[in-house]
Image 1: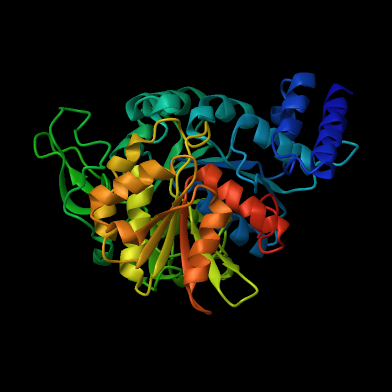
Image 2: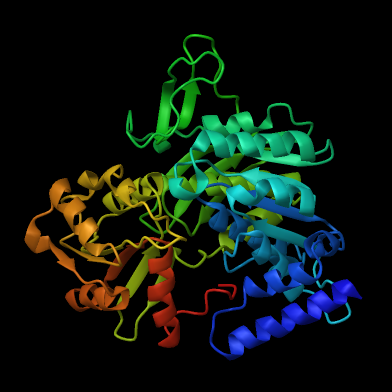
Length: 462
């Protein structure tokens, strides 16, 4: 009865949030449920016939989760997942409650949760997931997470103490920090990575967040560096380095800013075109393939699901406007993520007008000094104009000045929706305005576009 009371109360709160226009009820219902029943997530997750899967990491977890969800639904599985991106414990509980009937019956076969890195120790214990996948670890919101080594140590401790032999870790073989997370854990380990020469990026990057070997302290050498500290690393002193991945991207073709063609080799070889551009999305595809193969999904279903994938909100999401113009939303919230968006814009061609949004709300991270570690110099000469927006719009304008943009190329408009309109007014019908926001700028501009009927609510499946 206590669990049922928690479910009923949470459902009532979710209904009230939406009825009053106070968001999608994606977190508050979870807080209410946990207050009534502190183990509500454990009890509900145990009712899933095929258990649950957890995806975590700094970048890429939302896109990877949606890829996996699309494949699982293609395989005719009923999936419950935190579509809205509410990735703390309360968001997972709200998601489970939302899929539960009034009598406590959970209408799903499998749970799929993208979770904040800091929540992993408690959520691994609470959900007891079949699979935990880690996409990457980058410097992000240092005021909240602390240094990366601290985050990695906590995750590794959780995997050592809370995972069992029947559970699986899916890890990025090309990220030195992630590759070490399996150390001492009894769980089965599946690694993914990229071996395609087309993925090679800059020879070095000051945005790299780990450079030294954890065994001897020597500096890593890279046979191939894809971006930041991601690539084929090895320590020349002790020989410690990248382990060959079980699932690897062997061929890669970039098709503008919105698509990839790639071959992935694992239990079987697949060739697929995916509606997501950029090298970083090739890693998301590799992670999704590794995870789905660990779940026993067949090759045909895997290919069908990946080809049916459409981007999650704000992650290379395309929105159409009544006048024939469109915008492409490209979330970027840390130096590495921003550098990959810059690389995508630089390589895509035809990019004329860009909006860059910067906020310093809690969900973004209060410290915006990270913009000086992003390579905006690589963006000079790509767009004709840039509109900067958000709470810290002037900080971004200063950064672009030092990057080499001419003053007449940069317009400051603090309101995100108005900034988008400035860029749209400058563009011709059929052109695309590329919008690069931090998280709460994305929620702001997208919320206004929802009210205009241009974008669907962010908590709904796209």
